[in-house]
Image (tube, rainbow, N blue to C red; front, side, top):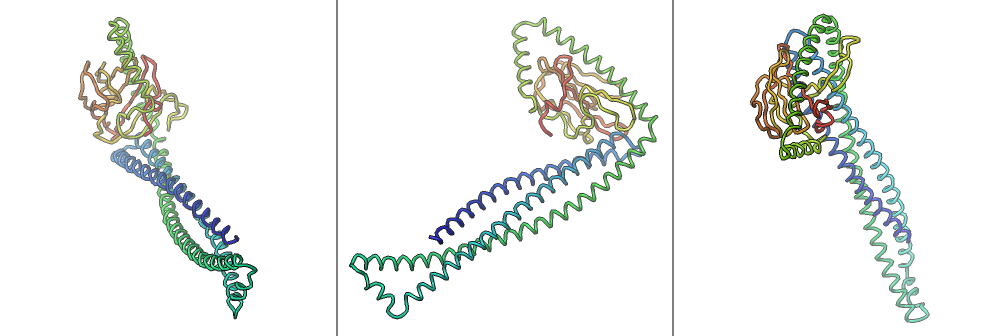
Length: 397
């Protein structure tokens, strides 16, 4: 009976080990995917940063790219730490399993030794025959014979179980050695990436100090941009008011089509594709200037910093309501999607024209790269004339 309990315990332990291993593998796969995504973002940020560093003058675009590079580096280190944490859990679980298997192996060996000793005593001289023929009846004789046969089979199974547990124990030791090796590699990787992060932060400190010496130039650029943005906002608002008035006077059929387009756009909130590859250099709403003290920036959209020559794409089907050139900002497109509008400002080339029907993902133009080597798209989403936070509408980047 004792051997049976031990065997059941081993089977349960192996089942738990298998299910734990599956969960660990799933989590490990997720972490490795996360790490690969971070490495991809690092490559993109490195490319953008290299383009902004190609000019002599330090710029806010260079600082944004460097900040993004630091952010992706921190995310990579975080994913490595998570992976190390997972390995530590696996190693701890495997140590517990090894300990439990060792205890079971000792118990099985002890039980097997008792069986062997009992069998030895029973086999001496005429003890075996005496035991059989001292039965009070033929039925009892048969029962004793059957018992001796079963006892021999149990002893054989016990020996087999010892071999199975020894194999399982050996397998666990191999696994733990492999995990320890993986952990050593990850710890070395973490140390290397940590040194890279430290260098990036030193570069960030130097760049911020350098930019603070150029306050007059930064203020001049800020005023030029604010003037250009205000001009663009007025232009966009005028066009949107015209579109709203057209919709009010339109026939019912056209209104129904516009309503359907609006509903389809709204249903895709948080799932819309990004208009261009890159990262958000300036978020929606109010935020402090990264260098100038007591200066608050107001953004009706987001600034997406990208690489030179990147193509800008429509995030949803619609119709081009405006194509305009604004000094300092470059070419701008306004696309209507029923009650919703998207704005793409900062284009070098434009591939579409006013009144043209647009499909989702259609190329609209090429992003403009300014004299400082910064390639940036100003992107907005509006419901009628109300600006919305684009990051709540676009898919997770």
